[in-house]
Amino acid sequence: MAVADTGSMAKAAARLRISHPAVSKAISEIEGTLGVRLFDRNSQGAELTAHSEVLLRCGINVFDEMQQGIRSLEHLSDPNSGEVRLGCTDIILHSLVPPTVRKFSAKYPGVQLDVRLTNPGEHQVQELLERKIDLLITRATGQQEDFHSEVLFDEPFVFVVGAHGELARKRRIALAEIIKGNWVLPPYDSAPGTLVAEVFRANGFSPPRPLVKTIAIQLTVSLIASGEFVGILPMSVAALSAHQASLRALPLKSPGPRISAEIVFLKNRTLSPAVEAFIDCTREVAKSLVRAP
Image 1 (tube, helix red, strand yellow):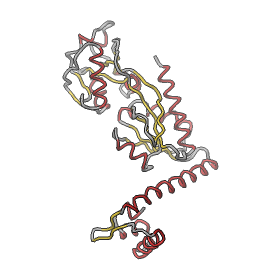
Image 2 (tube, helix red, strand yellow):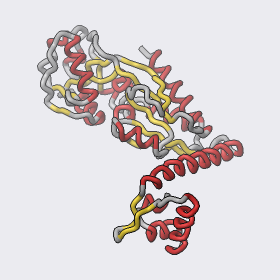
Image 3 (cartoon, one colour):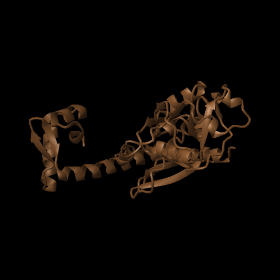
Image 4 (cartoon, helix red, strand yellow):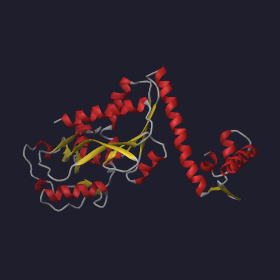
């Protein structure tokens, strides 16, 4: 695994703090036992063969299960210990994650949280497969063979303006009054942009040309809070954003698609007690969002 990760025997030896000949001998002994070549040696280093790729996947799984077992043993000695490695998309990072982290850390102050921003799509799933993260909180990924996917909640989109602007003070407002405003929206050719476009069509309008196109939630929320832009956000983002006091969801009916939040982890993988506790905490916070007006 060290040779595969570093790309050379010498670099693997330096990482493992053993001699180069010791690494070469160990690889040769494994190849002799298995009867297959694991690496093609060349001047650039060591390249994986098809045989070594299969063995590497098994090795990752074996070492991961051992590590999870060690974490479980540590938890028996000290229930307030361990680590949770969480991957989440930008939109989840600025909505569901902060209240979940606060709630979990208050109950388990000794558990370390490693929270990583992951890009939507295959990359985030690959990090799960490689055991770089324990679980993933994201928008809908759909059922996949290797993963357990649980829908935490689904929610509508809401039209949002700055809380201190003129539009926020109106008791009644129609979408026609803001359709020509300065919109900050995700690109329509992105996954969230496709849903946002459907929201406009469901309300009887063609999707407007946004003044700012971005999928960065922090930028989107900050611009809307300034009072100079209007936008569309999932309800939980509008309610839980760090700028929530500066946002106002307009009293507009918002027919059209809803968007879900899911928690995803590998099937047939032992989860440490700390990870299981974090999943339970996430479910509790998600339920409170569903009950919220």
